[in-house]
Image 1 (cartoon, helix red, strand yellow):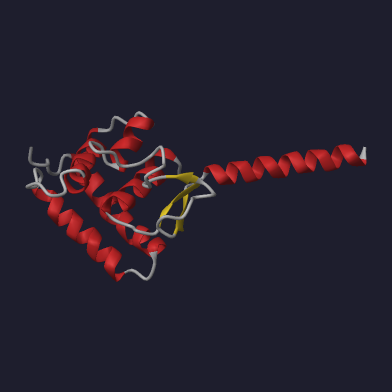
Image 2 (cartoon, rainbow, N blue to C red; image 1 turned 90 degrees about the horizontal axis):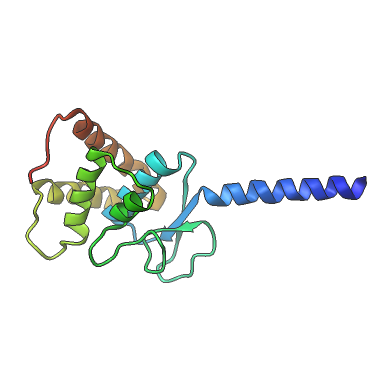
Length: 164
C-alpha cells in the first residue's frame, strides 16, 4: 500500500511538472518586436498561463516550448514572422490579429524594403524604445503587452484600419 501511494504521488508530481512545462515558452535573450508580439499573442490567444524564459543567444533551449529561435517550430522563416507562424499553427483567424501580423511581417520580413504599412515604423520604434529602456527581457514583455492590447482593441473596434 505504501509503495502504491508513493507511486501515485510520483505520477501526480510528474503530471504537474509536465503541465507546468507546457506553459513555459522559451526564446533567446535578443528581444525584438516579433518576440514581444509573439509572446503577447501566446499569452492572450494560445495559453493564458504562459510564462516566458530567456536563454543566451545561441544556447540550446532545454526547457519549455521554444519560439522565435532558428530551430523552433514557432519561428521566423523567409516569408513569415514568428507571429504569423503562431497564428497559422494554432489556426487563429481573428481579422484584427491578422492586421497586427501584417505590421510584424512588414518589420521582420520586409526588413530592408520600403514599408508597406505606414504603422510599421511607428510600432517598431515604440517597441524598440521599450526594449532599450527596460531593465530586462521580462520587463520588455510587460511594457510591450499594453501597446499590443491597445492596438488590438482599436483594430477590433474598427477605430482605424491599417493602410493597404
